[in-house]
Amino acid sequence: MNGRQSAGAVLNLLGLLGISLILAVAFFYQLALGELPCPLCLLQRAGFIAVGMGFLFNLRLGERPSHYAMILMSSLVTGFISMRQVSLHLAPGDPGYGSALFGLHFYTWALVAAVGIVCYVALVFVVKDMTGARDKDGPLGGAASNAVFAIFALLVAANLLSTVLECGAGQCDANPVRYLLLK
Image (cartoon, rainbow, N blue to C red; front, side):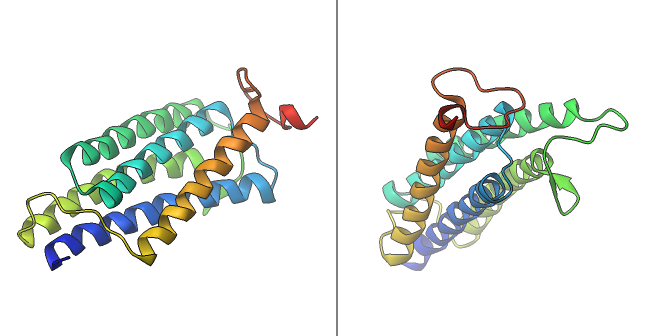
């Protein structure tokens, strides 16, 4: 692998690691604090999983414009879902949904992250352009790539399982307080 390939690969690896961190923090709050995600929260998690899949495709299949398009479109959709939830809690005196992290609720952080991901992809394009790596790069293998893939896959599976336990096969409660299938 030459340096041009590794710059894009490392940035995609860091992107996937960042998405995994977002999912891990949300999952920690769910398990440790018992804060079940609302339907909009679940949609935001699905959006971040789709973003992570774009980074993963770049790592496993090689960088392609369609993978970056998947990341950007998923970020935009996640941002719009987050804006919807933020707008639901703009009324004065509204305490918001769930607890806050550094003074902001998770749906606000999701909006910040969605915008940040779009900026990050722009940075990836600039770095690739500055290093002369305009062509698609090949897949990245190795222990680091495998470890980040395993972490992401575990978080996706855990989120899927917890969503099924929370909602069953039907629509999720608007303000969930218990796992539907664990009662």
